[in-house]
Image (cartoon, rainbow, N blue to C red; front, side, top):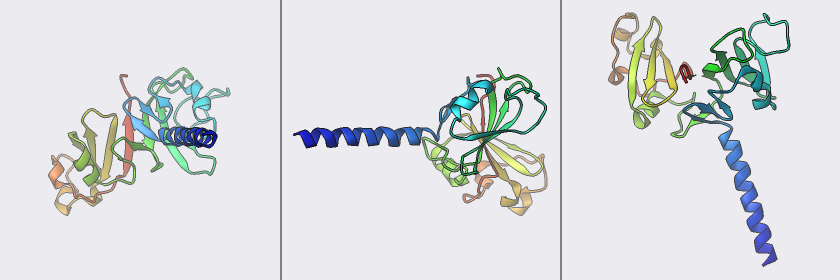
Length: 186
């Protein structure tokens, strides 16, 4: 009986630890890991206490984080790129994120390593915008948007930025150039 209680307690502890580790890389609307759309720049050192935060500009004379930032894990791999709504304020919140690490995933398994087929199979596309060298895919009811390089499209779709591209024209195996999250207006 005593052994059964100890084994149950250990199993519960291990499942909580596994859940917390998984949650650290889960993407939901308004949240990625423990970072939320309401997190301010000055709170980032607490949110990423085990990681390194690197400012992309040296414009701030103080110790306060300001402007665009990148987050690296302790092993040196790039995790995220963060852009605040106001560049010169430590009180600013993050409104755009670029995901670099494939451990960050949506509940449906979408990550930087996914393909266009994963989008088609799991999401409704709310819009596709064409630029000079890429197509940007917006997902319905999601903060996530994906950029695919036009080099992965058929030749006849690559060179006209005014061309309307439909989801059916994007190859299933097309990989992501950028995996982005936008929290503007939240």
